[in-house]
Image (cartoon, rainbow, N blue to C red):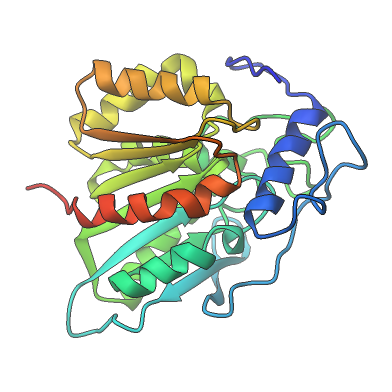
Length: 293
């Protein structure tokens, strides 16, 4: 499978199947249940999964969108109003919602580290959080009927709204507020990480599907570097949804520009397994990188 970066690229349906299949596999479905590229019917969006029982399901009134917007929330038992608590904003991948990322090992590590983790929807299941939208034939930007003309703006705004909700509800440590994302959410992390740089102590991209940002990666990386925000990128070398050679280009640019970054490439890692397998390194990186003053 080849993916060609560019502003007007259209992706074949098989690529969408591959991305959605990886999401299903990462959410602890068996590989037998996940459709393979080019075989069987296209997965229907939005996809749903049984939430982790430790994760709360919430919503708020998104005034700009004119409707209630869901988000997921995990609060460690170690969180207290009497002290400042670290926060992770977690951006899910294409087709699902926050429950596909805020679960399993991420929740285990968040409980251990005393984190609050919030997973915004990003307006809909494929809003791309303000980053350039990857479009698929016959499916518009998100292959759902819920696509307003200002989708990118609304998707971006939803993330910032949820961040502000957390600051109002909890005693958040602004020096330990982090942004992470998987696949589509990884693209959102690289985009929002630079645009709203003052909010983040560090960023984590998990197999970032930042295809349409690749040609301008020096601009995106430059914003993050200038804000002195460290970045960790985690990638599997057998990922067929986000091929490793594209992620390596982002990492090479970070290296060339001399920014504070760490790259972990897991042998035999794919687009789904990289989430759980890479999570311990991400949490160690966050713990080691409070905001620099």
